[in-house]
Length: 381
Image (cartoon, rainbow, N blue to C red; front, side):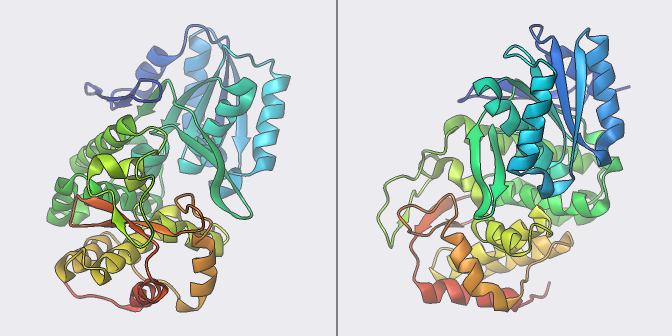
């Protein structure tokens, strides 16, 4: 029998619940808007069995389902794929009162959200994430986007769903590597806001990598709470504006705002672009967090023990902490196009201690390169 679900409220950009647990069918049918006559289900081939469950729920609710299958991974997040979705919505007679459901991993929920945000200037959206990364990060918070040649997520919109329905049991159908790489976003939530997450993983890393464990459900719940709290305080990422170049600004959670969720992501997005998006997002974020920790150590914000803790925590989960050294000039140029960059000034989320994110603005070039060169190092237990 399905357990009673946990509901976490997200506010700030249109209030909605993230529902964790319970039966997928039961929770989904309860959140379908009564006004929606047509429902488009966007999914990848890899989650087709789950998408079929969603189609059945939609049909039982008396609504007309239309299925759009998109490519796996970042290949879905392009203008061409979005345009193909718009064409199908038009052919289906999709109106402003209808509904888009995204079923899949982070790339799918990003693309489905972008399509919903842009069709007729915005239609209702429900997210059904099927990977750990999508559950704890991509599907929650209302950020949508696609990639272009210049970089990742540079075209997008803020568009809150009407609900996010998370069924942790579907993680058993996901490849182990996807579950492990999704843990990078869980670790991030622990490092920026909820250190208990780090403690729980360190106490039992084997349970953390087991999608069927009770710990996995607790990690999902804690990570979603972190995302919900941050997003509710700063939906449109307005925090951290106006700091001076060469400074460390935003010395506290409220001032850093939503940007704290980008911990490790500045280098991560550059790595993803350099790798042609063939590297998993979580792997890139893991490397990016080690880079951010090294940067914090070099600028006097983290002690050596905390830098080492980053490496030890991530390697205990099987996540990468190193990267090839010949790409530095290319990565540096890509980072200058990062969404946090303002007036061509590089800005990084770093930590002034575990659970204390700050913004480092325009660090010296030699410190950046030194931090990157340390990504070839390894650490013991």
